[in-house]
Length: 219
Image (cartoon, rainbow, N blue to C red; front, side, top):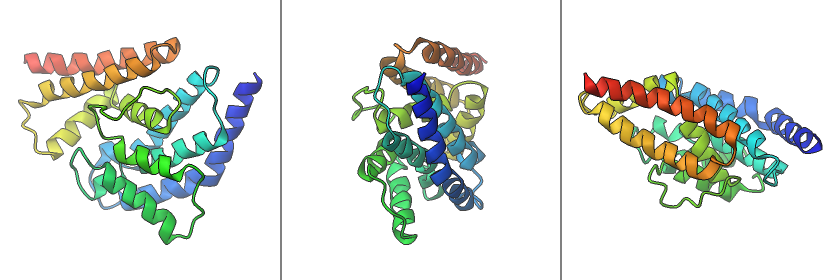
């Protein structure tokens, strides 16, 4: 109970310090961009999935305030680079936006800032080449929280919109989505399969999305 209480306090403290200002900034830079599947509301959902992961791993991993703070900041910046480029490798632009936000507003740099920037930059590698399957690293948590927002019914909408915006032919879309979806779930499985409640919940959401696109492909 004490460990859970500490995590709750860390989250409340981090949200009080960062959430409103970063969410408002994220909303501002997406204001004139028509990307509802990846805008400020997506970033907030990723933070909610991040909290879910943190609570799930809390009894098995050493969670401290710096990790929570780092995950919150990374969540609210990870896809901001899509306001510059719609390409899959938008993480570097997101990292630059985060870095410039702190620099231009003279905001004190968080303790794990380099790890935050690294996670933001590399989160878009859905081949997971640099990934080490450590459940409590900022990169692992961010990647998986982002992937969880691609599962379920909302994932159907998100995949369809961003793939069409990238110029992918509608006939090719179902096959490409399923391939990408499978990579995301395989990564989630390798990292969090041991956390049974978390794993089973999101496995069902993954299967919902996969079933939709497999049936679409059949038509």
